[in-house]
Image (cartoon, rainbow, N blue to C red; front, side, top):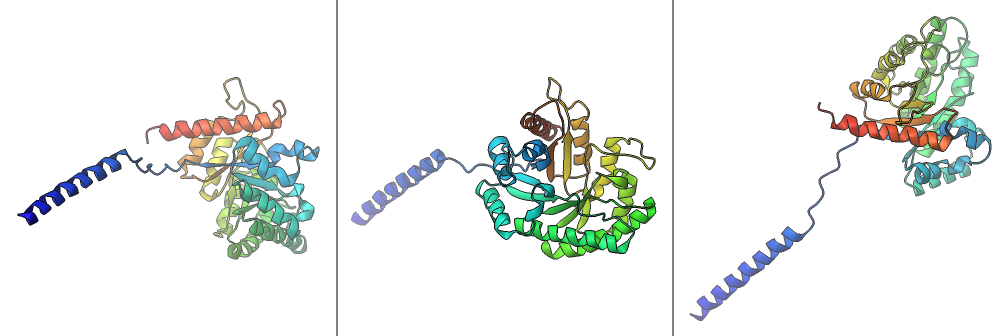
Length: 311
């Protein structure tokens, strides 16, 4: 009987412990459901602060810090002209990378200007430009970037420049591959503003490390006339690895005056793109900080709206 009583008491104790355990689990905070990945991530283009940098009100080394503390943006897009003499200065680059890391900011890409015409038909001229861009690929790799943005400028006919550009991009793509980098062309200057021309360059290059960086602002047709920006972005999306959300001015409702951002984002997302979109304020009326915030806020507002729309 004693044994049976002990068993009963043990059972009661076990039952009580089980009830307490269930109660404790019910009261414990439940693990949060995993956050849904946003439709896209924001980066800040350094050109948005070009006046502050040129007037020495902002130091290039502090750009990643400002991106986080002033705008709460976690990725930056450098412009090489603001640290052109530092491309191989390891002490400087180490400090730049440290400041970014310390503030949880990713060094995303470097936009390259004034380093030679990659679409020049002359082999010697083009190869010198390619060599200078290789130097910047090394810089980008050291900083932990994902891409280098290049321009395609040259001389001669559109066909000759296209063929020259393909050779340069193939060479840069081969160099970028072991560095785990991409080489992206923006529709910024020369024939690259013509989306049909740039799309043909992409088709002929066909290197897996070469792509496009569509900019909302600059498109022309083969005759140099303004081309529909929404169609232009759509034509470049098959190769897009980053996006530049250029902005100029905003109305009292926070809408961009010259570009329908919602329409443009539907083009971008409709192509299956869900990566980086760079905030690039280029306007004059608003201050640079106000223009950056207006662009950022519009992109975030539309990101929420588009995510909530039925598929």
